[in-house]
Length: 623
Image (cartoon, rainbow, N blue to C red; front, side, top):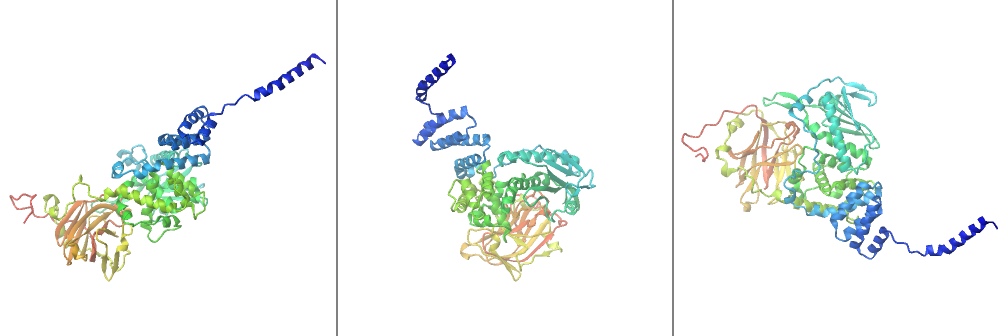
C-alpha cells in the first residue's frame, strides 16, 4: 500500500465521519420562507419586514413582490400595497404577473374613485389626466402650416396610391403632406402621443412598425384622391388581421365669412384632435387586433380627442343617465353593429369609457386585455370583474349600478343652479337696456321671405338628447311632446341654415292646469348633439297658442308674441358651424304642441330700434 493510497483512505474516513456532523447543522430559512410562515399564521404586519429585505437583496423576485402586496393589503397598509403594485409593474416582464398587479392595483384604488365627489373633481376638471402637453403652435406657425407648398400628388408603389409630395419620417411614422413643416409637425406630435399612450395606457407595449399618415390638401382630395368615405374627416384603415395600414386627414377646410362668402383656412381641429382620435384606433388595432368591440373602439378614440372637455360633456348627459335614459350596458356590450338609436349608443359608450379611465392608467389596458382572454358570451363579465374586483357572475349589471351611482354623485350639483353664476336673463328683466337688441329684430323677422317650412309629419328631421326623442310625436303637421312633471325633454331641429338664423313656430301649452304654468323655449346643441346648457325660455300660463321666435346669432334671443322674453350669449362652437346639424332644439319642462315650424337665414338686419325718450333711464322698464 503506497503513501498516496493511505492518504486517500484517510480522507475518505474523515469525510464519512464528518458528514453526519455537517448535515446535522440547522439551515436558516430565507426571508421569503420566513415571510410565508408568518403569513400562514396571519401575522401579516410582521411579514412585511422580511419581504422588504428579500426584495432589497433580490430586486427581481416577483413572488416576493406579490406576497408583500398581499401582506400590506391584509395589514391595512393600502398605500404601501399600491406603491408595491406600481413598482412591480415597472420591473416585471411576466405577462401573468403584470396582469395580477394591474387587477390588484385597480381593486385597491377603485374605492377612491367611487367616493370621489363633485367638489373634488370640479365642474369640468381642467386637470384632465389624459391631456397631453404638446409643443405650443403659435399663430404665426398656424399661418405657415396653412400654406399649400405643393399639391402635385405622386404615386407610391408601396402604398399603392397617390400621396402628397412632402414626406417626413420618424421612428414610428411616415407622414406625407402638401406642406413640409406640417408633415414634420404631424410626425413629431404623433411620436409624443404614441409614447404617452404606450407608457400610460398600454402597459409599455412596443409599436413594431412605421405607420403612414397622409394629409391631403382639402376634403375634395381626401375623398377623390385618397378614397376616404364621404362625410368623414379622418379615417384609419385596418387589414383583416387588425393591424392599421394607413391614416388619412386633410389640411384645409372651407369656412363662411361674415358677408356669407367662403374661404379656406387651416383645419386646426384635424391636427389638434382628429389626428389623435385616429392614432388611438391604430393603437387598438396594433395591440389588441380584432378583439376590441366597435363601441369600445369609438369611445376610447373619442376619449383621447385633446380639444374636448370630456367631463363637461358627461355632465350634460348626466340628467338623462340619472333619469334612466341610457343604453343598458349588457345591450351596449353585446352590440356587433350599429343600433337604431345610434346617438344614445355612442353617448352611453363615451361616459362608460370616461368612468373606466377614472380608475387609473391600468384600467383600460386591463379591460381590453381581459376581453381577448374569454369567449364572446362572457368576456365583458370577466373584464368588468377584473377592473372592479367583483365576482364574474353578473359583473356587467354590477358595473352598470356603480356607473349610474357615480354619475349621480359626480354630476348631481351640475344639474342645480350655481349661485356664484349670474342668473339667466328671463321675462322679469328683459326690459333692461343691456338686453335690448341693437337692431330691429322683430322687424327683421317680419320682413323675411325666404322661410323654409319644417316637415311636422315625421321625426326624421329631428334628434334628441339621450332618449328624449321618444317623448315626441309628429303627425298631421303637428309636433306633440308629453313629459311628466319635473322632467325636461329636448328635440333638436335639423338645419342647413347657419347663424344668423331665426326659428318661428306656434306653441300651445297642454300641461296639467294644476301646475299653473310650464316653461318652453330653445336650447343650443353642439356638433355631437349634446346639450350646451345655453337656452332661452318663456313661461306659458294658459292653453292658448303663442308665437315664438328664436334668434341664433352671437346671442340667443327669444320673443313671445312679438315681445322679448329672454336673451343670453350664444354658445360659440370651436369648429365650422356647418358641421352642427342640429344647432337649435326645442326644450320643454311640460307637455306641448308645436305647429307652423319654419326656419330662415338672415342676410341683413333691419335698422336700429328707436332710442328711449329723452331723460328716461335706459335701465328702467319702458312703458
